[in-house]
Length: 212
Image (cartoon, rainbow, N blue to C red; front, side, top):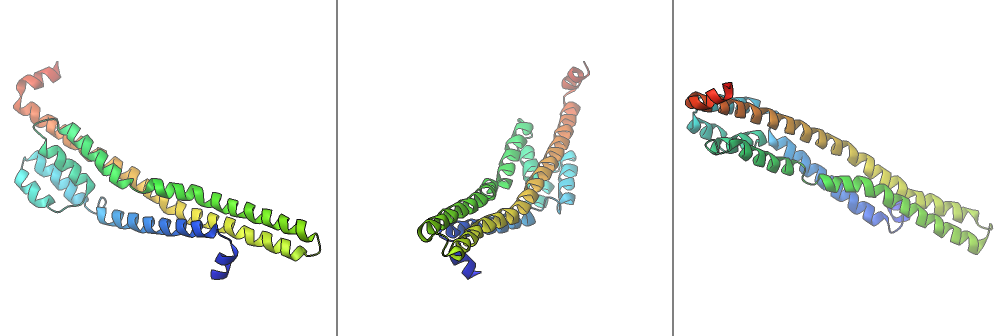
């Protein structure tokens, strides 16, 4: 492995940096999703909606204390602003949560794109050097030329390997983000409907307006 790295040329160093960054970000995102609890805390999310229907705010505070669940945080934002534009409060909180979920995704996308390009660049540079050697020595030493091309291809193989290994977790994280956004929308909509129902119960004039 070390021998391949040294034979790959100077462009192996940025490729090594790309691989280290990609691995670090994948580990960080994996920890984030493991601790987010979106799928694991479904009972808690349902409980928050039930307690909201009962207007048991104190019990909600106790049940959600210390929760890192994104959906719960969105619902709590709506509950805290229930007397004044809870929908906009939940939209703002949801945007913040989605932003946290998409953190570092741009960096992973960049690595997937740039790693193969660096590999190809390394191969092109290696081939140029090989042809320079061919021009200097003629065909007297063809092994030197073919050996140089073989070394140049190391960077392309490395770049493609980094991109391929990175694209799987990248797509997985994107799928999790899309799924989380759907869950947030579902529970936020449920809270909005429940809140509207509560408001019409205490405001007959508003109920009449809806009926008209």
